[in-house]
Image 1: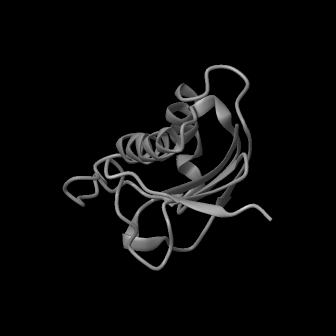
Image 2 (image 1 turned 90 degrees about the vertical axis):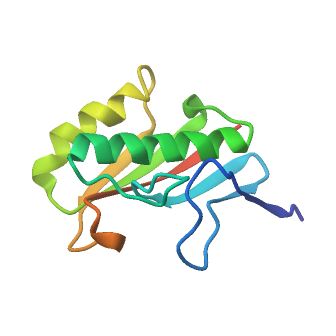
Length: 127
């Protein structure tokens, strides 16, 4: 049976609870939901949904690269929003990370997210 491997990048925010940044199992990478923590300061930029989404995507990119993959290895994503009215703005930033063949995804509105952020995104990638 294959062993799972914890993926950790110093260039991404440290987990704020009992979870790993990501788990690599075989050729599949499961990245935990990321929020807009800046990795070296632990600050969150809530100045705009665009800035927040960009930081989330940069955190995801860093973790995916730590596993030896690229953004085009992402096959599935889940986006959690506090306010569905931000969908268009989030979509615009998110789309820049997937210029061709974007992954399958769902976007849902939730009542609350950790640290009072407005967006959280998790992904699954495959080699």
